[in-house]
Length: 461
Image (cartoon, rainbow, N blue to C red; front, side, top):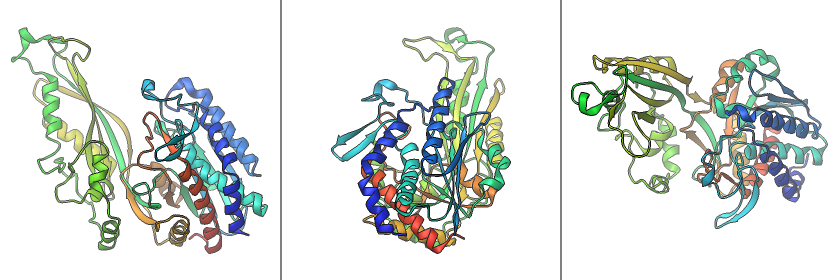
């Protein structure tokens, strides 16, 4: 096996690899909208055919929702599973895009060349970095360096309703030595990173009901309970003046950072002023006694994601609304149980409900935090391989987001998961004008080739 030859092949074939990615990006595989069911199926078909072109036995697997794509290649050494998702977020508001989100192109920008289009960074571009590394490896060496299972999902952006049942039903087929996930980013857009912890999440929609109809504020104002007033007070009570969540038991069981991890994070030199300044902010709003990296990686949160009620159209309508609504999400860390947090929040709301109001709850998802076992030798092998490709040495980092599949690999398949991604902070994933840095795409392919070489030589526990 010649790694240098594989890397040279990647460099030589970058234009062709970019063209393949652009072709995949043209498919509007929006999973949350039923109007795009057919494009989601087409994206799965495209990936099946692309894997088959690499000599991989691949097929589209039907689920109650959008299809899964599963492919296998046999080999010696460790058995790796690579996961990615081919579905994308909706593009609304369309008027904020500078170009058609499904007419992707390579664009020159002041920061370099980028691939512009929905899904370019999340997650089609990242998914294809691994596929293109495998393509170059096979073209140079005639075969891949070890056994690999390819597992591509089509519902990640819409809650993954088919994922857990599919994993249970196909556990024996999917089980491998370690799972690789490419759906994360570089640290501060420059340092290659291996994510070792992810926050979980609980979502709740609450509806506070007051009167049985909207009321005239002149006739009833001051006498009747306004459910927006009641809801606003409840939401305001969730945090104290120091940024701590006041829900009873919320912090129970949460471990403190180890001195080793704290030292690693401090050494990263996180520019929190620049991070907040890039979105027009200046001050951390979380727990006053925690560092900014702790706030976003290792501490739990409670956030109001939306609130509405009464008349919200143009002009003015003087009513006391019958109902008020809010959407609240909790990011969870190690030691927190999603069901217990949901129950505690509901009890918190009910305890503050005025006499003339009732409340209804609608759950939305629930997943525990994930902590990876970095004693697995695959982690250090991958970290060294990444460090050889990028100007800065690779780091172990946390992630404030939630990627439930990482936890499912552990709980359902008994596998450790390693998350490596090449996105940048300004990629605008989930937003208009999403892009993927062309250099990140290129170096991402090279990185996976180096990691494949390292893992196939040293093995994965």
